[in-house]
Amino acid sequence: MATKGQSLRPSQYITTFGASSVLETPEGPVVIAAPSHSGLFENTHPDAYEIRDLRLSQTLLNNKKIFRIPSNAELGVPENRVVHHAYYFPRWSLCPTHGILYRYKPQSLKGCPKCPDVKQWGEAWAKSREEAVRFVLACSQGHLDEVPWRFMIKHKSRCSKPDYLLWKGGGGAIRNVTIECPECRGTINFGQAYSRKFPCSGRFPEENNRREDCSRPAKIIQRGAANLRVAEVRSALTIPPLDTALHRLLQSRAVIDVLVAVPVASKDLLVQLLDNLVRGHRLDPTVAATIKQYDETEILDAIDDILGEITSPRELTEATLRQDEFLSLRNAASDGAPPQRSDKPGGPNQFEVYKENIKRFRLESGRTLRVTPLSRLRVVMVQIGYTRPIDTGNEENQPRIVPVEYLPANESIAWHPGVELFGEGIFLDFVSDTEPRGVSEYFPLHGYAYNPWLAAYHSSDGYRKIKAMPGTKEDYLHPVFVWWHTLSHRLITALSVDSGYSSAAIRERVYSCTINDKTVGGLLLYTAQSGGDGTLGGLIGLVPHFERILKSALRRIDACSNDPICIEEEFGEDKVNGAACYACQLISETSCEHRNTLLDRRLLLENLP
Image (tube, rainbow, N blue to C red; front, side, top):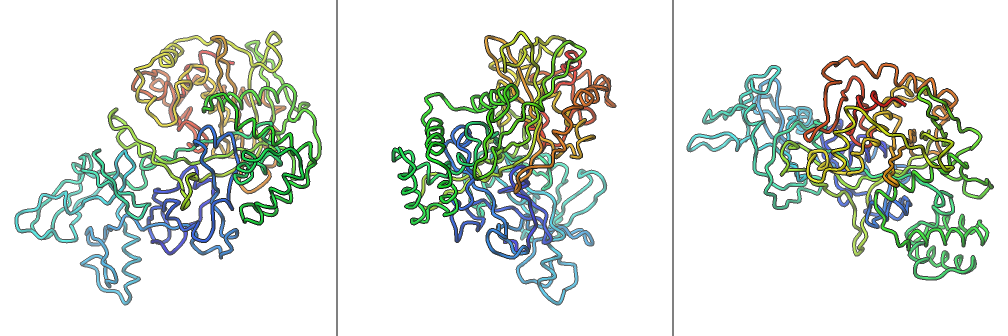
């Protein structure tokens, strides 16, 4: 287990790293331990670090809870102390001086057999970690293991299969590398081995090498490859009426359990229940004290809102969650949010729109673009698991989502790691004087690129490659969604020039909704950070100048340095994009909710706003 630390921000843990990711540290590469083996909850319970978001928990997490990764300060330990465990991986090393693949033997004074002895075994261990080999073995079911270096060579008879091998050749291609047994001189070309499939060991190194049966093939892959581990993240925007400080306090799991079991008709009864929870060490005393500051009417109204959300008869899905957000954003763009403002203890609402700051721009096409600044917003992001999409060309070997969760002893409800982000954003949609108030304008799309996306949306059997990607829904294949998503990437790049934020710091949420066979869409661009009340207004300060930013985003949409290859790319059953490449459309994958898929510059070019 790793003894030296490597600092990670909570948002990094959720969006990029997390359990089973290979992290580079001062002591070489390690695999981050699963929450159950992390050591975070050896002396505490995740209740102490709960993130409250009732809508997200009910819809996308199957009523599981959310915990945040505590900092060293919260745990009361020095900043340089390791608080989240990790395991050294891979253990095999490659000595660049002598070209030898070896595995360090505990307390040996040398790692590579041909290197001279050192004074202390710790020096030899540190050298072996610096020389850790950069290849591992993984399968699409989430398993990860060492490359079977010794056993993939066809040894000659009576060979003892020594515990080190010779690495010969090199250069710019792995086909130039030969791995040789020093005893029997059996060899294998590493380029051929790299393309082979191996039996999977079913190993989960993040769970202290737990194993399970696996019939899927495993492949050699670089430990730093982007597709070795892809975090599966689910997120939700905090919207009215659950956006006040009081609502968030009452969403504590211990409080909700009491509210569901006991009808609360007065503030006095609630105070008694809260005191009981505090005495039983199930609720933080400061949470109870803050709730008591509110008057009875506010408390009872908030309880009704929460119980109404829990007992709602409608089916709660990702689609309904997105539609609720879209509706709240459109209502806020019409009436502001909240419509009537009042000072309350615990801080302002985390969904705030000043109606007087909303701008409308008449575009050359005749459409009206409505730009709505959100001065405050809260987004909760949860890592539900990870995938290893290492064999995406094989439809029968699609990656599964391996859950990342923590189940406390003697409990039935698991916890997922998450992070809550506070910041600002800009909501965009089109409006018309003929549409009812608050309803986004529908405008039909057309063109050569429109038809393949529409066919994909209506298809039930085809387009398996993109539909098989975890988190991809059929609604995301609608041309209106692809149009807004493509525009989003253009705007993020343009905004980064003027806002003071890099393009990697601006995130997106794309919305589409179909009513009476008419699909409308919208777009939320936001920047947020953890551990604070928000950002400094660099994004919403650009709202009065948004027409210029839109023109900048579309100025060179008809040109790409990879044209004509890029613009002639057509979306089809074996594709995840239309005309889109790194030079014109792709952005940081931490900003894009869909991993730079579902993009088509030609669709936007043929339907300019």
